[in-house]
Image 1 (cartoon, one colour):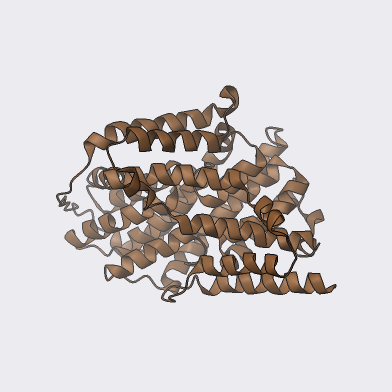
Image 2 (cartoon, rainbow, N blue to C red):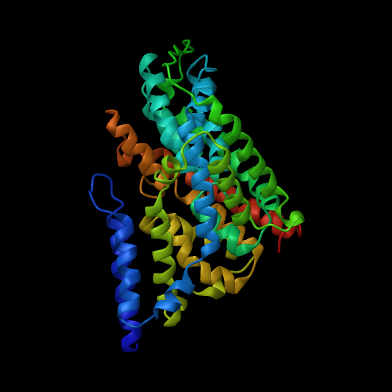
Length: 418
């Protein structure tokens, strides 16, 4: 290898090593700083010029993330998430029904409201209900994590990696949902039965759930604007190809409407946007472009193995399972983008979306939503250990990945996707 290639490889290894070890629970380090450091090094070492680095950033994805963040933050500040969590869980009459409601409410909400935000608001509500009813919250929290990832797989806006895939693949929003909806819904059914099987003592009785709703102020005046805007944005996602507007533009239009028409001060909303995540994405784009420019990225994975047939779909799912545990599913997806673009196969794009998201359920470090729930629960004195989560996570992951392989291949064999 040349000097430039060695330099790029070292920067890449340093960056992704930092990403791996800054994601461990209890370690007080900043994940994006590793990616940002790597991006700056790519420029300082001359691997990329400043102009090339800027050009490497996928601003369509950044725009979609920003637009959705503003919408989600507004709904969160209005109390919309808390309201959904309170009203859905209030319908629980016994332990098993509570489990079913948590799984499907979390999963479906995560598909349209971004899973990281959903679990952040649902977790305290679940713990409060379990404590007031004398139940162990651990099985329900594990179910919440698994459902948030599984449900988010069905839409382009369900999670950050799907946003990346949706923007780069060009697959219409409605088509994406139609093809991956069965995987998510069946996956949620699998979660219910796996949790019930692993924790039989929690569901052996049909005791009535005691639900004590804590008083909370909901900003209904603001919701009159924010909720209709969110519904409008979601509707426009489905018809974006017909109206000639891209998904990022629709998200930005919705965000601007909420800022202009909503009852919250725009400064309150803007300061709550996760700007660090946007920096993280931009930095990853630059690092991966640097390694791609040197020609090294082709050596990581044999692109010839990634074919839109049963074997290729299975291999991609296997790669997702392994690498998502090492670097998490978002950085893994960024690395895979050049391979997916070269293959230019909607089948493989969908396989990557499904597999990278479902693979995040295997361990507590497989996806960001997992860590959000575990850290949030820990702050409320509920601890979920690695082994505790793994025994349910790995079963659900393997079953849903197998389901995904067969489902994606079935769509391909039927000629619905190519």
